[in-house]
Length: 76
Picture 1 (cartoon, rainbow, N blue to C red):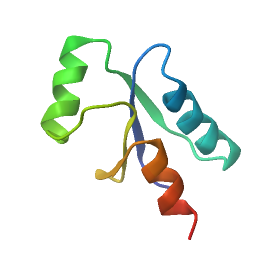
Picture 2 (tube, rainbow, N blue to C red; picture 1 turned 90 degrees about the vertical axis):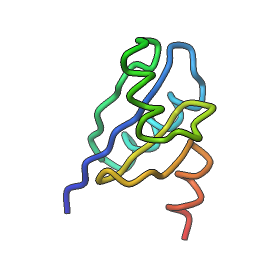
Picture 3 (cartoon, helix red, strand yellow; picture 1 turned 180 degrees about the horizontal axis):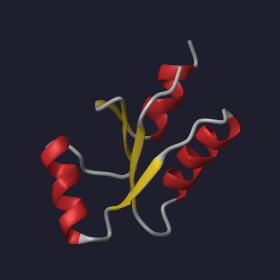
Picture 4 (tube, helix red, strand yellow; picture 1 turned 120 degrees about the vertical axis):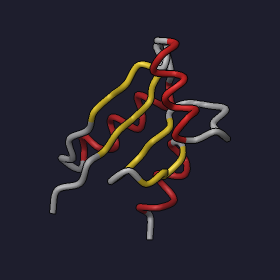
């Protein structure tokens, strides 16, 4: 089953890299959007107005949250 995975990331973000490594290890492809770009950052906030950190991860257009939320979701 293929899922659409999107990661809003910033340069030099350790948790962003950890999230990408998580998906790489599971063989799941993902799209990365650079929240360093003001337009992309605005898009991220439009999708999740409560976002205060990166990464912001969406799977099939559903907000997962950040890296720790991702790990918690898949640790079941």
